[in-house]
Amino acid sequence: MIVGLFEGSTTPGWRDAIAETERCLRAARGVALETGAYGLPPFEGERRGAFVAIPVGNSTGGGQQRPGPLFHHIKMRRIIGKSIVRNVAMRRVCGAQSATFAFFAPKMFSHYTKYVGALYDSQPELVANFDNSIFTAASFNCGPQTVSLDHFDHNNLSYGPCALTPLGTYDYKKGGHLILFDLKLVIEFPPGTIALIPSAAVRHGNTPIGPDEDRMSIAQYCAGGIFRWVAYGHKTGASLDSTKAGRQKKQELNGGHDERWIEGLDLYSTVDSWTQDLAMLM
Image (tube, rainbow, N blue to C red):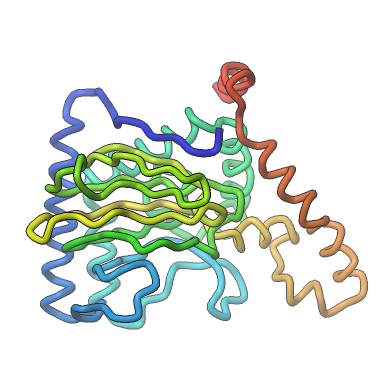
C-alpha cells in the first residue's frame, strides 16, 4: 500500500480546527500579497503552480554543509512562516497528518523516527515545526487557487510519503481532484481530508477549480538529503568523496539503484502485513 486517503479526524473540534487553519492561511496570503514577500501574481515560472507557497522547516541542499532551517533572506517571509507554525489549529492538523502516516505505513514511520530522531539528537539547535509531527518541513500553499501542475517533488525522500491536506471552499465533486498520473487515478479530494503519497516517485497534480472558488493546502515532507546525511555518519556526500575510504563507504551505503528501491518498498505494509506491522509500532 503506497497511497492512502483518509477522511480526517472524527474527534470533537476537528472541523473547527480545519476552519481555523483556513483562516490562518488566508491571513498569511493577505500579508504575503500585500508585502510581495513571495512574489506577486501571476507567479509565472513556478514549477508547482501559480499560488502563494510558504515553505518552513529543516532541510538540506542549497550549498548547506549540514541540515538546517530553510533560509529566507526576506524578513517578512520569516515572520509569516513563524506565525503559521505557532497556530494551535495548524499544529493539530499537522499532527493528525503525522499520526495518519504512522497508522498507514507503520514500518516506514519507524524508519523516519530513527533517522529524524538521529538528526535532532545530533543537532539540538534545530527546532521542529511541530512537536507532534515526524515531518521535518512543510509547504503552506495559501492560494488563492492552489491547483498544482503535474510534477514530482524531487528533493523529498525518494520512497517516502508526503502528507497532503486540502483546504478552502470549492466543490470537490467538480474540481481540486488529486491526480496520480503514473497510477492513472483521479481521486476526489475534499477539504480536510489527508492523503499520503510518495511524491518524489509518483507524478501528481490537481484538476482545476471554479474561477470564484478558493483552495489552499498543507503539505508535510522530509528531504532525502536528511536521510543521506544521517546514513553517512552526519557528513555530506562531498566530504566522503574527498578520501578513498570515504568513497568506498559511500558506495557501500548507497548500494545499487534497484537495491535501494526494494528496501524502500519493503517499508510499506501490504494488506496482509499491515495489522502485524501496526502492532509492532504500538
